[in-house]
Image 1 (spheres, rainbow, N blue to C red):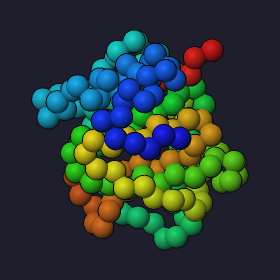
Image 2 (image 1 turned 135 degrees about the horizontal axis):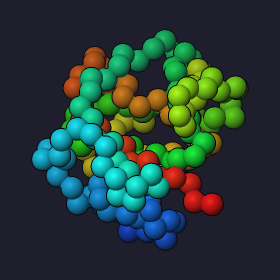
Image 3 (image 1 turned 30 degrees about the vertical axis):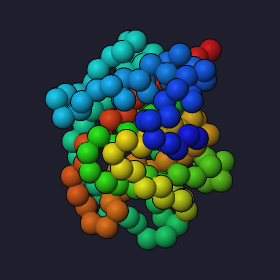
Image 4 (image 1 turned 135 degrees about the vertical axis):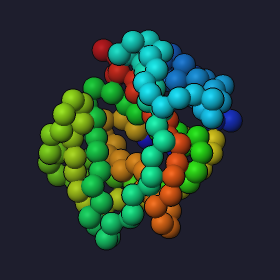
Length: 152
């Protein structure tokens, strides 16, 4: 997992060309001028989902619903608003309940990381995560998620 700010994009350039491209796109795009939707940067290998949503209330301790992916890593970015993202090691949460596509769901305790403008979070398959959780009360946010297929 990587939790950082877009001002440090160059730090991660050597990890993967697709990760570099995704972070550079996030850093150079004014998302107030981009409509909600899916934007392909490299077809299914690298694409970005832009969405305007309302954050969800934080559940009782230990009962957060988290997600994980096997074929893609996520770069979670908040273009406007505030939220927290729950994170936990996938292995610590037990079995995944399969969803549609490359997603499964787990429930359990997690640590919440604050997300504000300019911050990003990269999660790999071993990282369970719960995006779009309210800081205090549900509020509108503008979220961007870059999906990067894990290279063979």
